[in-house]
Length: 443
Ligand code: GLU
Ligand code: MG
Image (cartoon, rainbow, N blue to C red; front, side, top):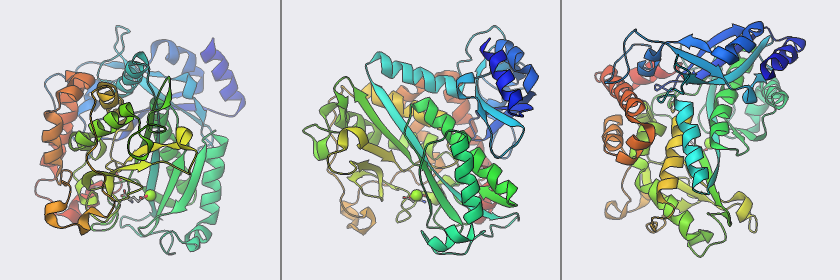
């Protein structure tokens, strides 16, 4: 019934087809589309897609893993009608994220969105509600094989907004038409770079929104003859594109990150959760900064959060604690994971953070001392540890994290690691410029 109503409503709005997306272990958004008339049938029985995409790499080559790989088998893609959105910048199109099911009508365990939803349910069962939002950074350039910025104005400069005024207007209009609550939009540091932030929502919603916002940014750019990149690095050695993840945690008493006796108002449970996230950031890097190119971004003094430390409003700390305007803490206090970029699968990232938080709120962990300066300016002996400096290091940390293995399940965990290892091998002999060139237009 719901699908038939949705189909009628979409047709009345001139929609001809529905794009149904999911994000694979390489961080690439893959898609199947159906004519709008087929939606009721698709909601009932799904659309076929091979499980082999779980072992695709960023260049579309295919690896394999113990439990997933090879050309045999099929899955069913089931769109989530709650998120069905008419795409303002793609006339005739609507979009919905999918979850993957087996042909026996069971949820497919290695489905990344199912994993995220399961972790949210695990949090709810423990009396916890997480709210999250991804920031989106991107490069916009002329439709060219080389990264030629579409604007010349300075970092954070009004000139860029004037140069790309029509694009920005269309973008904000499209997002508003799609019901996306934009918080702010601004030119960023690197040439041709912009950033957009959206309001926090539930974790699966934040991941869905990340897909929708990126797709909209790209579609509006295409209508202006421009090309966008969310890749970790667009030009070697320059500041890259982050995809920082903000999160807060509430229990029955309120926000765990405000109104407590700990540093900057942290409650004991809030501090324990943050301490765990900080301690496990090297493993989380394999999920949040999963590309070989990610480690060209994750360097000191790029505001990318290269050090394993935390600090109140410290933009060089991998975990930046944000309290907001005085007096608004219960509503606004949150933590930002900076070691997350545009190559990350947002569903894996939100699910992994939920898992770490749920496992640790009651572990009584304490944060190390706060870092209140740029860690790179400290004497070497006083510097906090660097986060992994290579993907291999991050993979090794994740491979050793039994909590995340248990949360993800063997099939997803091993397929994800196989893809990460495959990409290490893919770029084993590549120079930074070659890695950047090969990944620039893939995300
Ligand atoms: N572009 C920076 C990064 O790669 C982030 C800049 C900012 O703090 O917004 O993470
Ligand atoms: Mg930014």
